[in-house]
Image 1 (cartoon, rainbow, N blue to C red):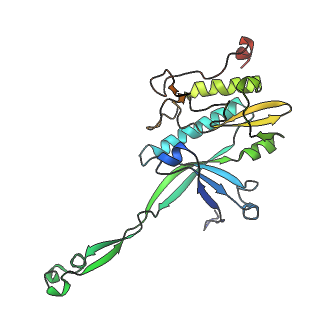
Image 2: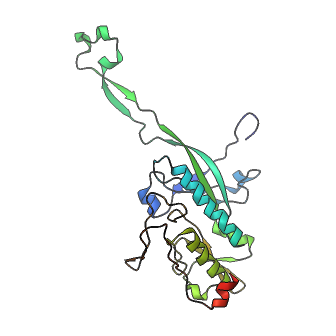
Image 3: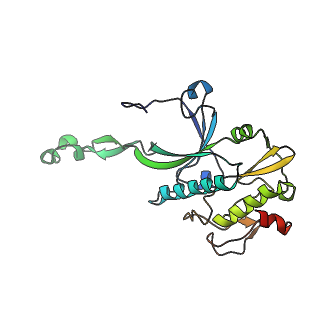
Length: 252
């Protein structure tokens, strides 16, 4: 933004995600930017970004986004390998209700003329205005950008947590336990990416809206192998890490 106007760049947006895409009023988005358009902007070096928005039409929606953003910032303090995020304010214009409605013509004319036979059975059209929402959002960098920053590669295959870098895996599990999140799997890369560097596999967590820290109105306890975990709600804790040498836990 300059002193007098906003700069604009063309971007391409599409809906992403599984649960939130199917259940949220504001689906999460993926933003694609041409390299030539991002030069000399805060988006330089980013071809793809994820955008997290409030899920539902609730007064608390923006607060939920802020709490999820806090989870990302906490993990930054715990692990050198993390997604960099940026908080944004978005003006979201919903044009889904932008359509014409039929009204009796009498509703558009002075009352003294409404009983005139001239307007009998006549109708007029009125356009509904689109709705505008002011939303908080999280911009999340692409996993390939994280990999490049660390001289690593993005792994697309499953790697059991016991075969992942020990300290990184335990740090991730402790973090998820701390924020009360069970909606992840390092084994099956659910809400996790994996980086491979110098013979080690490193977990890269994201999506914390189901955590107890956020405590979203739609958050539920995760179902693992068709069995719901033995906790009553997301603000209770269930450790989903794996058994390891106790010395490693003490080190973390």
